[in-house]
Length: 257
Image (cartoon, rainbow, N blue to C red; front, top):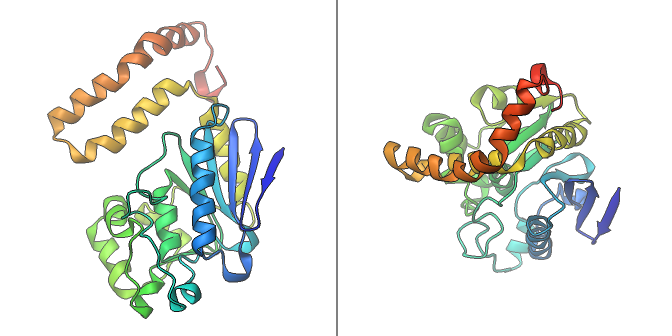
């Protein structure tokens, strides 16, 4: 495993899987300005690395991310909105999947970071909340947009307005979490899932992913037309060979193809 290290963000590479680690456990991995810039740079490096297929985002020391560093904010630091600014690290999805491996708290902006990821694997004791509600800090990380789209308006407003804490079991029931695993296993489970995704034919998987993201802003007819457009390359380059593998007996019943 190859590791690249900075003081606040770590990058580890294992074949096609890149794991990005928020490394401020002393503050539950709250992101100050430096850590936010380093995280954005890590995302950019992953996105432009041709050998990297799937990313995993994990917080060191038993917490995912507690959001923005409020002590730095209290000192007068000028935060650029993580999603609301043109260059914000959470402005848009990357062009490759990212899986959040969540232990401990994913709260305030940390919840926004988790929502930005494609999939979320949470430990049984993980907790999700908009705790910044208590201190009058608004969301500018995409939370108010992505949360209702993911779990519905009623559940989203309950979390956004009341600072309600949602445990992993309830989060899975809501659709906020995709997998729940025993404590201490979120990173390993997310990396295992990432290897599964990396092993699929990539053109079809990524075109389907792009279609799913784009359809929200389109009418039904336009979305279906866009799906067809995005599928052309996969149909020309992957589908026929995949069908031949299936016909020969490969790839059935969950077996590798």
